[in-house]
Length: 336
Image (tube, rainbow, N blue to C red; front, side, top):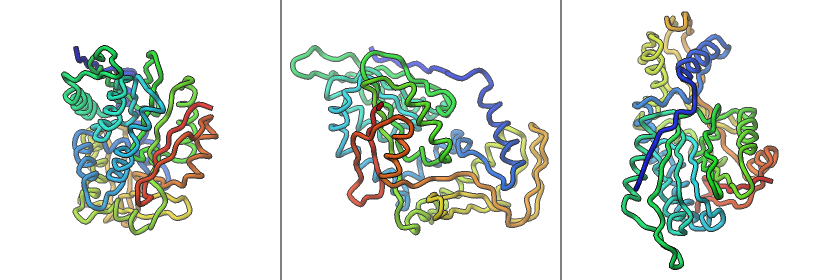
């Protein structure tokens, strides 16, 4: 029988305490910044889902193109019995991997990991509906049991939530989300992940690639203004969770290419000289007219750089794919 459970890996009050700590640290720093994970309340998740369908936002289409072509090979190489997806969101592309593993007959368990409970429910429900009543048969073997889903509510940068399980595990970190981490954060994350991987496990990593800056900026500053609303949603979250009084109309969305760091930066620019109160954390924060607060970096990669970062963490690049236009890279690596 198909089943689902949600495993809450973090202690009670973790997200509230983490939000407060991030806000105090970020809004008292120079320059000011906020971590992008706080975009994703229910509205933020809906806005990002809209972004992935915009003409300007190529990463989702490019990664889907790769997965469509390579999922059968990924399944054959890994023969994973468990697929763990970090930052699953609504798991829009994951079905391609699950289908390939299911057809091979190896798949037993899908583990979406995300900070958004609503996104987890969507991801889990979508996959359960997709496989309800299916049976996988390979080489005359008996029908496989129905897919099990164990959703994990977690900040994967703090608690990965990898299940022990039997058989090889495939950890998928898709969408280029690793680019939202600063270099030191990426190094620590990959090293921590490597420590939890066993022989036979594998990491499938999606990385957006360096390309024409005009294409990159357009992907983060769409003509319909959806990304601008998504960027400002972080202020809505602070208003709702901390009693802050940010006036969203007094902040402007900014997206720019940092050529030296090779990443896109999203910022919010104060349209006026203003003070914002955040009573839940005892802050009164001043913004000068024109002052910019960074809300996201999205690093872009080259194959050599991805290989080097994986190697530094103790992982060996085993496969590399790109879409036809070379916009996005998907790598499969194994413990070294």
